[in-house]
Amino acid sequence: MPSLDPVSKTRFVLPPPPLRRYLTTYYFCEIESPDGLEISDLLLPQWASIRFIYRGGVKMGIPSQNPQNSPLAGMTGPTSMATPISSKFANIFAFGLLPLGWYKFVGQPASRWANQVADTLAEREFDFFARIWDAVRELTTEAEMIDRCNHLLLAALEPPDAEETLVEAAHLALTDPAIDSVGALCERLEMNSKQLSRLSDRVFGFPPKLLLRRQRFVRTLGQAMMNPDQNWSECVDQNYYDQAHFNRDFKRFMGLTPGEYMAQLHPIFGVGAMERARALGQPLQAMDRPKNPDSNENCNAA
Image 1: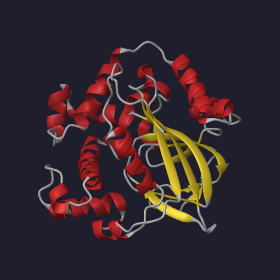
Image 2 (image 1 turned 90 degrees about the vertical axis):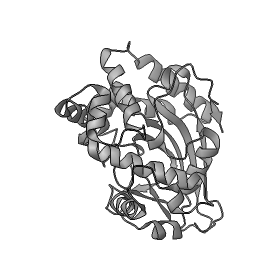
Image 3 (image 1 turned 45 degrees about the vertical axis):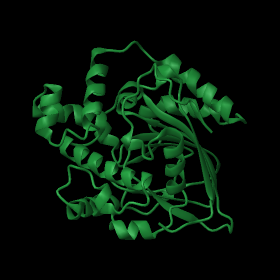
């Protein structure tokens, strides 16, 4: 991948233990084009995210479409394709929602918002996140923003229900490389295919087969990011037949060949992914697995 002068900085902060079952991380992204020209990148397939833009502006596109002005308080649903993003300058405060977080804080069918960007100020389903935006938009420090967000999210937590255990078990199975088929997933979860399809539609946003396909793809790409000196053939996930099989998935999810993607500059996502890997051990949000709330993981990666 070509080298580049940094035009963006991203800092990651883990939420407090009670929220780690529901959120991936908080993060702050600063984008500043040195020559005032718009810089562009691609966000990889991932779980849902909430993004608050408190300075400047960002353009984001529904996957496969040209970017449009992103809402100041926006929600990106779970994605199965690369999402174009561009900006001249911006400051963003954001956090990712694990599937259990979607179940807990949204509750609407994830498939309805898959591969979509929504304005939380305009969509009633996301009133809760609009209230968070109202609470943090005038704050001046990152610590204040995180404290206020923690307070509101913790206050909204209700006691766990039986469904949460199933959602976490399904998430763990989906991210387990040993699960390589819908049949194996059904067996692990002790569900039939119709039950699994309904759960996937409601919480994960896509059919089980596509979710498994997406996970093997991001595992391969994550491995390549963590090991830049290795070639693609050394990074390909065990559930691919060969590199040609991976190349077809790459084209499906990214709209590019691996060579075309690696030849491009990635001044926003690429920089953030490397910082995420350094701070949290995983470059890609879609690789995150349900966290043990009692874990002693590093909480501050600023």
